[in-house]
Image (cartoon, rainbow, N blue to C red; front, side, top):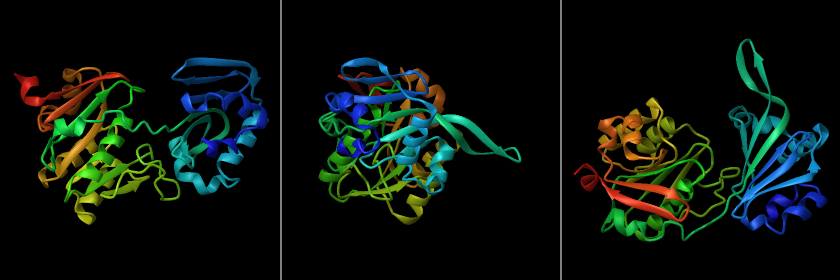
Length: 286
């Protein structure tokens, strides 16, 4: 977590560093107390309130004093930092000729800290694999329950252990690999190719054309154009590892549509961080 230290003042970091390894979110809101969330729950630092000029300085540091170099990410409302950490940003929207250009006067930030919890979901590969062949698998959970962490660990385990496999990771928001300047900050293994900062639809189609994957891994599916690309991948003989927001299977089927939903062989339903179940489609439909 030392990669984060340079962005914060010494006083603020002195509050954080004792628990930073257990911290998942740092929420900064102009003139409001800082809120830190993690495995310990939530802590509110009443004595720490950032003024507009404090947030301006912090924004300059996280953009290396060259905000224009991060124009594409800023339009999406986030930045990826070294170490795989992400910062969500909010402020005043800027439009030119009716077209959204980005934001100015950033007054709200959410640092989402990347932790490598490599044992999370360990052994899942044995449930979804037939030898070296991975079955189509969909990971389902509410936000913040660890579906991306589980996907990342599953990619790594497959990459290390399944001979002849080639995984194309479509990492639209750098949440899977934490790529910074094109270099993954999180090890996904020797059989993974990563397309970062690309839409899921374009990334899926590009991977099939250029990389010859046996598996495509993608996070948080659900939009219509993404579903069409996923169906194209399945029709091309590529297997899928994907995640989606949801709480129960019927909800996910309604969102994906029966045709795509029924092509997944396994559903991993996460109930909370320490509890999930892997459901085979045959047993789910019986």
